[in-house]
Length: 593
Image 1 (tube, rainbow, N blue to C red):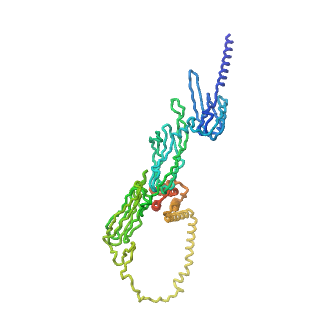
Image 2 (image 1 turned 180 degrees about the horizontal axis):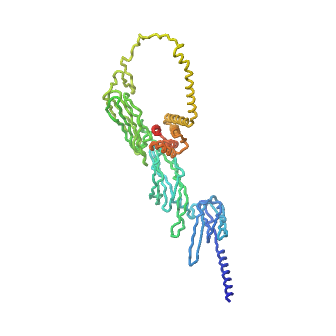
């Protein structure tokens, strides 16, 4: 009896296990769900592959006719209700149609408990674009509405040479998070003089965009001075932004689950309409200054002795295009010796434009006693606020030379018309030719057999050892390839620096010659091909050679100017400054290297 009971129990256990196993096999589900089976070409399609048991080796279809915008993303949910476990695992994709027509979402496959399961194919129809897409918002849709790159221009209709600022701001909705960004394309500012205002740190601020609350960060600031009238284009700035956007799914604690996506944003191309400066009322001495300025002419002293020196300074101070116009030329009496002026600049650039002062300092040396007036000189500029020209005139300055020869004294030089010096005749400047020369006859001397004769005779033999030594020296120099390259580079540096000086006023020729001079100079000094190195590498090499940081920075700044000159306009004043800076830097590096 007990044995029979045991047999029936074993039978029920085996049948129950088989039934349970059969029920488990039948309970496996793997299906595909589409957000819609008909959509416009400008809409998005959400495709979900859902299973009720965990599986491995999920293989999606190729999604022919669609472009994958996001996915595969994975969502898992598991719960216990009244002792019954509920499990769901979903792989989903966000797709964008690539063309109109009828398409099939083909079968996907997965392995569950060692068996392969496949989803059923689904038909999808893609129609023409719809006016208002009604599909579920994807990460890209949210990013489109929540991320904006804006170029804010201070003035869209400036005058020629009037400063405008461009501030690039990235506006981000509070609902999304930006984890990283990188520039794809920096704008060029053709037909503008440009100056970047460095952004040292990215500070997040609160603001509004299109009437909605946003957070924003300033990415780039630049000041522009238009160098040409008419419509000028500012190219857009483009960024690749990595961001996290909320989805409709929630985590265990009820918080939104974020999806990561990449978005390319651009600050739209801007057109600046530049107004030419009016010709009506333009002063004859107008040199292109635009802004608000003060003008003065001063001297370091007003009384001195002949052969002493003084400094006469022509200075313009204020706000405007300080680096883009020529200073008035100081006119001096012809009896005063005047040297080439030394240009000085103390200018800083802010978002409102250039501020500071520029000046020419003349060294003046009087030769004669007397009083010499420095006549007034005028300076004119255009004021954009009042939309008119303004002129300023300096005061007359009297220079009193207290001690020295008189200008009308014997053998002196007087000043004639047009500041030309006229030689004053004293009557004693010409003497008679001597009539008695006191000449003596040359004595007869025999050359043959003399000491000079024998010296000339053996001189060729004495020259042979010298020729041998000289030949070996030439061979040694010719075999010294490194030394010859250095000498050649040194000669080229001097040659191109001289070429740059002759090309002052011709931007392209000047900066090409200056860049070649700088590279050949380093090639001669460091014995390397610096044209193959970036500026950062050159700066490192100069630091290793213990070159003074200010000198190295000046050298790198000159190389940057040579590169910028290809894309930005440079005035003749800027070229003169760069040539002078190059001479000073090379001289300083010569002493240190």
